[in-house]
Image (cartoon, rainbow, N blue to C red; front, side):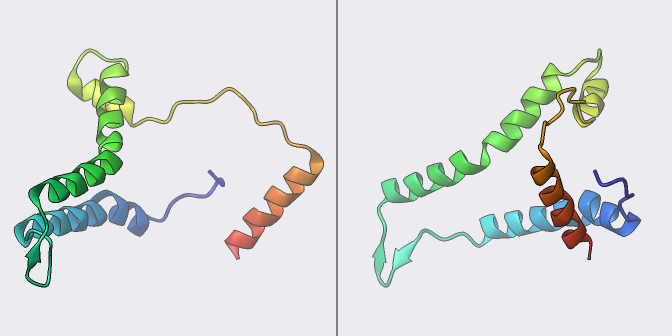
Length: 114
């Protein structure tokens, strides 16, 4: 994005370590899950279901969009579709900015690089 290459260690972390840790945390969370309670009071089943539905509603759009983009992409085999789904699409629309907005953006980028 800024014309710089991503360091190899960051690519390795992003591809392998982070997904592995997240999967480990998810599996462990399901393993140690206990129904919620407050003191000796156990919440009703409908409250637990409602909490899970809210959680799923927040997380579910990401994998759904991924599946949609894989099936929408060009290709004859699943492997081709999956590979092409992860290639960024070019956006031919240029963002029009006046000089003040351009200067502000340039300053923000330089500040982040320090």
